[in-house]
Image 1: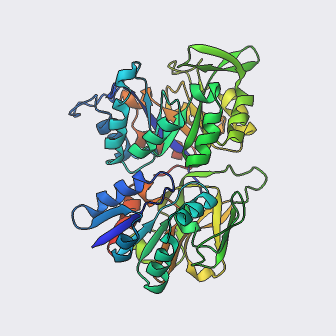
Image 2 (image 1 turned 45 degrees about the vertical axis):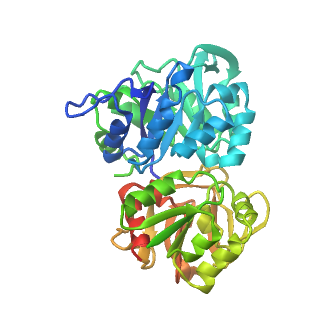
Image 3 (image 1 turned 45 degrees about the horizontal axis):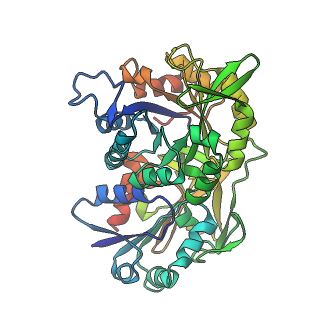
Amino acid sequence: MLKNRIIPCLDVKNGRVVKGINFVDLKDAGDPVEQAKIYSDGGADEICFLDITASNENRDTIYDVVDKTSKKCFVPLTVGGGVRSVEDINKLLNCGADKVSINTSAVQNPEVVVESSKKFGSQCIVVAIDAKKNSEKWEIFTHGGRNNTGIDAIEFAKKMEDSGAGELLVTSMDRDGTQVGYDIDLMSKISSKVNIPVIASGGVGNLDHLVDGIKLGHASAVLAASIFHYGKYSVKEAKEYLDSKGIPVRI
Amino acid sequence: MNVTIVDYNSGNISSVINSFKEVAKDKVNIEVTSDLNKIKSSDKVVLPGQGSFKSCVDALNNIKGLVDTLNEFAVSNKKPLLGICVGLQMFADIGYEETETKGLGWISGKVSKIDNQNGKFKLPHIGWNQINIVKDSKIFKDIENNSHMYFVHSYEFIPNDKSVISGTTDYSSNIVCSVEKENIFGTQFHPEKSDKTGLKIIDNFISL
């Protein structure tokens, strides 16, 4: 039976982890490679890096991080943030990323998704959808949540599936950082609309939220950042909790 | 000993390279090449594959003499070869992804789309699934039955002769997830991404 995945996400800026795991025995709490290794040793089903480097001159730092991580972690590694072109994707894959998540450029230029999924295969193309509720619908936001495009998130999700995306990483902008739980309505609507796996993101504050994301939101995988970063829960604890709720996980 | 990972522009092979180098350490030399002479002289060959069946077969054919060299290595000389993901699928006679495409024909059978039972099962089949070991395979030495492996695929290999199947996984139906026919081994899952158990399978292949 296919297991639901738990994916810890690390925000990386200029090659350093921004919000790291609060472990005292860490030699270097800002080292993304070391943090990723802790997660994979702890049973993470995948690792996700979100590169939030703002300046162009430091953008190459992520390649070095990916290269080093992929030599130490032998679980899938997804990298997103600032991915603009087929060439960017190619570079990340060559450095050892297994999947690349595309956000703003998928909205601005859906051809990037078509082209890259043809060139590298759908299995490594994740489209990241940042959505915010506006009365009865959800709209896509780009540029790290700053720009409202007015595009309907659910229709866009379908379009991305048709364009060749292998998975969708759906983040509720309303919930992101709030720790009140995923936007279950959004997750389940997108999940029932598409036939590719949906990864739920944005708003996890406790382990029941992970359960809800899978049971009610019908997500194939759940992504979380801060609950793991600050050592509130370990990946292992999260898995044991999901298991106790009857959710199939890899233990 | 030399183990060659065939680099034929089949998509992203960095993870395969990293995992083999991790396992090999300094004991075994890992080559990554499409050089025909190097392939011929190596002790073992790894055939990775990402993307579609058709794109991988096309990529193999684009390198002059590569298919003949692989045939000689695996079929005539019977040296150990491991196919991963589409690398395994290409053992078949024929594949139906994108369009009907002829495979290597090493293990008679076809590659067709997983039956998603009218949308009941999401495709690609992505994530960790347990393997059911159905026959002793040298690459499963010290691997427990029901171990978790990482999968990413939408197509499945259906061999005619079921005796080549060494493992299956349950997704919509019992999908073939590994084969062994004499010196030819294949995994539908990605040992290079399957954590310690995956690395053990790589170790088993290298140690054959």
